[in-house]
Length: 228
Ligand code: NI
Ligand code: MN
Image (cartoon, rainbow, N blue to C red; front, side):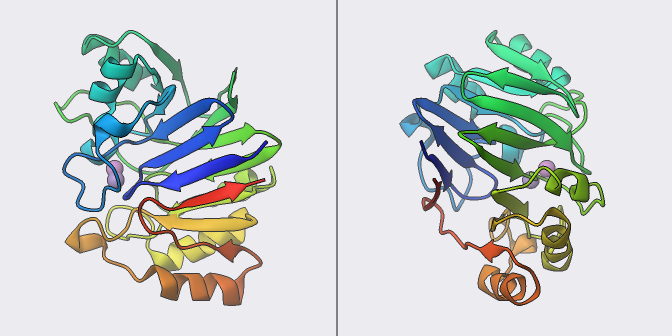
């Protein structure tokens, strides 16, 4: 079976694994690049990497409408329960869990995580999904870290890396990340949404092609990569 990975703009990613539909960091309302409105999504699970508004986004509204399971760190799961959504599964950095859709591990991310109302959001994370014999790494919001080498040792089919700079890795460090992670394919994200994170993804893709063995894939919001 294949996995369909769709970029909806900024850091919002859809992962279709069989009948399971995962939605990651659903920042759609107020996102100038959003490829779809929140009411179009019927996820079975929503993954939230950290508490910032451009990641929590429409998660609560979508979760309440659909009953989707929210997967995040312990503190953010508590926050969703306090907002009236009980269907959560808390994990934490370095821990994985076997869900019906696959094995999901939370990885470190160097960033912040306060929630929109100022609540404590624990530590930010990335996601490493093993499903259908494939491994997908979503770095989410982070600076470069050398432990990406350890994540890469797992053998990545696809990595999604922020290239926006200012709040996360920029193009230079994202290129170094590709060298540490050594994924088969790499998709840049978390750029162009705001003035301070404008980037040229095609110029970055050329550097990836020239300096690494990874295949860069530049998506437009709404476009997908299919892993099979
Ligand atoms: Ni953030
Ligand atoms: Mn962000």
